[in-house]
Amino acid sequence: MNLFEVMLFNCILIVFPLMLYIFYTIYATTLNFKKNNLFLDCALFSSCYLLIKYGILEFNEIPLLIFDIPLLMAYFKQKKISIAILSVAIIFYYYKIFDINLFICIIEYLSYFIIYLFSNKNKWNANIFINIYLITKMIMFAICIILSSNYNLTENNYSDFLLLMLIFYILSNFILYLYNKTNEIISLYTELKALEKEEQVKKSLFKITHEIKNPIAVCKGYLDMFDVNNLEHSRKYVPIIKSEINRVLILLHDFLSITKIKIEKEEMDLNLLLEDTVNCLEPIFENNKIHFLSDISKDELYIHADYNRLKQTLVNLIKNSKESISEEGTVKLFTTMDAKKIKIYIEDNGVGMSEEELDKIKQAFFTTKQTGTGLGVFLANEIITAHQGTLDYLSEKNKGTRVVITLPIT
Image (spheres, rainbow, N blue to C red):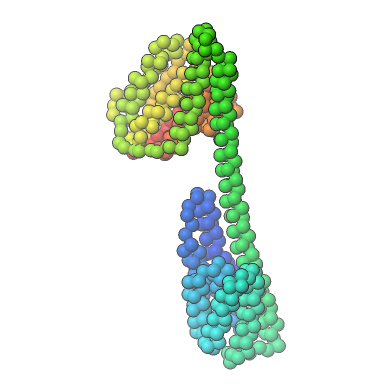
């Protein structure tokens, strides 16, 4: 193998565990997991082990300096325990394999630690410490080679010796630069996620403020016109003011419900829940030209779920279907199932939705109704998702809508 192949092979052995650690960091950041610093220690030890076990030790009878890179990473991340373990391992390795003077090795690695403590005390930039470490390493390595009886610098290998030291310097800086840039990208991604979350909160607050402001403005307008001595004003304005105040209360109730979603699962009969929901809703269909049809099996079907939360979801979705029908129409409730899941269908022949409306239907504060809060479907989707299920909408403008709730059978 030529020098390039030797260095590339050893570099892969170093970088591979570090890349696994970086992937773990990205994964933990994406899912908002708390990162475990022990994984970095494992990556550094793994790099050192792979080099010792499988790395190419020499080139043209000159020892390689690359074994110090995991230790340099430990200094870079200020992992004191890892520094101590890796230093002892490398000292022992140089002494046993390369037969380099043990006393000189101990002095060398103690000097690195002293430089590290001095740099922390004086708050040096990390790059200054790294460069001092690398220069000191190359000087100490040259002294060890000169004093060693096993390695003789000749005209043939003197240039290789200088080249190896230069490659070690460049490669160490490159790996640390690559690791640092990767961390910067992860930090940037985390900041972008935080900004997106902040932007969503701002939009949500803006929308709820806007929704609350409208009915309050209506109330103020009618109160400004209200004459307490005018009986006609009382009959005309009071119901409107009450209606607008109720609208605000409903909006606030829905908004608070979003922050209080708590699922308490227990074994329950889903068909019994569906029957209970039908009985609860039948009175609101009695005085309308809208028919409510249901096809529910009499057999018991047990699942692990939150009875009240699912009932709340079904009632909201069925009421949405009813309110989408302007005059005469039909709302249907039925189910299908297989060995692993059950699907609950709610169908109506109401006004339906466009593709643009379908894309936004699960977003908070989006509504197709004039008096809607835009939180009902959002809340329903959160509840279904918390049950490891899905909420899907199929709709066509002026033809109707089908809502499909899929729940796992356990």
